[in-house]
Image (cartoon, rainbow, N blue to C red; front, top):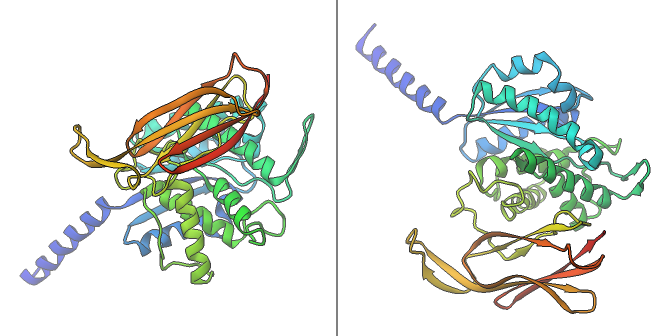
Length: 364
């Protein structure tokens, strides 16, 4: 081998080693809700356009739930093929049925044991699904509209993820937001259950922000959408993920300094309706309040006076959950309403000149 050949070989080996070290390995486990329109491939294209080396593999079988996957030896063979950086578990609408939570938890625990015995550093992401286009009829409960159905899926997904300490990819919640903002947007395929192209594209954008903790902005991969529509969906997905990191359990591994809220927000309480306790989450950006230097980090932050009050429907103050100065970040407060009557209550967030109110229902 000539000196020149040896030099080229060395350069190749160094390059491929660096390339491999920077590669992110992702395994999707799910069914046709994931493989429709090649959502995993969309994620690879989005990442590539951002200069990231992402490799995905899938174990997605038509009509197969996580419960069925967990009881199949084939899935553990797949899991053991690589040391995955991320394993994505696609849920289904079982999360809308509270009497099924423990069944889902048990099967996920079985999958988690296989994932972590293969590679203890794998991050496991639980995907919130998007329900059915026309809602659903639940036995012994009645008919639920799409919005009501999604609220039940939201509650169930958060409950299961919190029990198992899983991060959440809020695909379904991004869908709900898109349908609320643009009632003519086509996210569902003709069967009203599977995703159309736009629906899969939103999902890929949500996964990007969930995995990398970054906002998509004018990414050049549009699939077959117009640039304008793709940019709208990219922004919507990024906002859904990054403006609510606490709710999605993402603050443990995403760089908070990069993803502090870019605006004040107040989340829907969870659960709702509730008895007797509920959690309220909100975020304070760095652009509000008086700047000071944090003694712990030396970082310049902006403190502002923040209050979070609970009122009854007549406007009487019932509880004070926060009243004082807070630095930028994500916060949550729990209200235990054990000593108050059932009914509708208002929770009100004030920060500087900002004020927002939301309703919640206590059912005893």
